[in-house]
Image (spheres, rainbow, N blue to C red):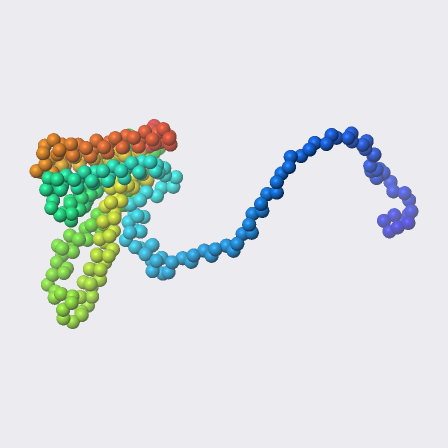
Amino acid sequence: MSNWNPGGQPPQGPQPYTPQPQPPYPPQPHVPQPHVPPQPQPPHPGPVPPVPPPGGPISRLRRHIGPLHTARRVFTPSRPGIVSDPQVARMRKIRTWVGVAAFVWMSYTYKLSTKLSETADEQVDKSWTSALVLAATLPVVVGVLYYLAAPAARRDLLRRAGRCFGAIVAMMAAASVFPIIVLSGFFEGEEPLVEGHFTATKGLMLAVLLLVTFWVLPFVVLGVGLAVQHVFRTADIHETVPPLLIMALAWEMALIDVFTGAHEGVPTLIRLVFILGSPLSVTAVGLWELHRLRVHYGLGLRGLLMR
């Protein structure tokens, strides 16, 4: 008897399972295994290198509100899932540098400018004019796309275009600081900052001068280049919009050069080649970019308009 069976009766129910003897396996033929040389063991990993600490407060402040970092955030497309083709970007850079080299060659060959600073000023003026023309063209293009797009796509189209218009407003607001200071006469009627006693007015003038020199000016200079390069971040609308806009901008700038008599003093044939060479090359690159977007990424105008 036991505590689990106090009556001493044999347990009821099925008997416990008893294993049955298994027949022996037939002998297997010996298969020689190929010789595998001993493999070298991986070296013991050393200590993990420490992660460099984040920059100091000045570095973090510069990344958040610095003029160059701010310009990149404002004028660079940032839509999630955006397609960026490195070959197209490389071709754009090549075309841009070829155009700059041709402009410098023409300026020095035909004595359009006698100093490198004058040539640089002309390029800056041309970039600023391109940004202004692009800012005026973008609303027209968005309006046409809104009219052609399917009704279901129009709200999303306007929402994405809001970032582009925000970049235009930022550019115009920053650039307007210079004429406002000049027209307001802010720095007139006061003795120079280095003469006389330091006053609150001089402190305000010094603060404004430092802000304009070290923040507004770098922001505008880099912003103009990024605005033209990224076509006021219109890739946030759709990847096919930048090549369409940049082709329209190139032909508009060619018409401006024709009506304003640009490059006077250059032989007619060279002037014609130079004026038409820019829009023709931009159009070729733009059409090639649209072809790559359609073939390699499945992105076309029908996807933009949802047709």
